[in-house]
Length: 214
Image 1: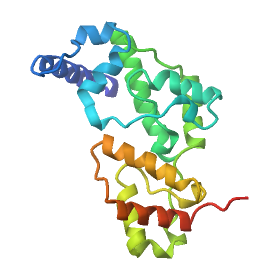
Image 2 (image 1 turned 180 degrees about the horizontal axis):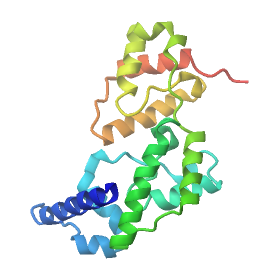
Image 3 (image 1 turned 90 degrees about the vertical axis):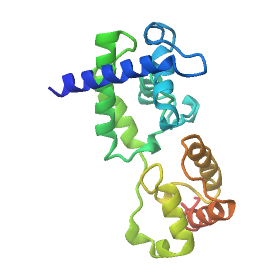
Image 4 (image 1 turned 45 degrees about the vertical axis):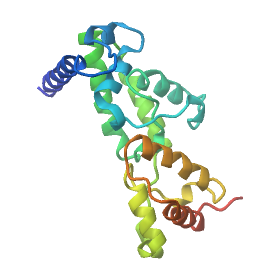
């Protein structure tokens, strides 16, 4: 029953997207072109979802980028959207997300033939890889300064897109570049990008509680 419901919803969404393409000013793919052309499913998803799709990363930026899990992630996930980083969700959240994406790929593979679907074993490997490198959520009991101005800036900024991260995931030297990358993602997804002074407070909070270099 769930599979048929998801199939009906997906087909309705695709039909609605196709019907609305002609009303758009810029040239767009038709549904038929999207389903048969190179990278058609990915192009159609971008047309349908726009900025709601999170920006991706390069395969070389994945942790253990040469591992089988990383390669499977890059192979299957980029058929419909950009490559997600494991830090997009926590270890607890990833199994549900992967299961949902797996059902969609199988539906699109079986009914439309526009993507390849992973096997059960491959899905388990992808899930395990993502969980090993997932976002580590913060343990609020360890940070007494979360209610300070900097702590509040950190919470309000970082929780827009994912679980509030543990500052101990990166060193003080690493956090500025991580925050700079996340700032670009926020802008691309239409999130609120705080002023420079606020972002400096966020970085300061993260660096104060960062992982100590060995």
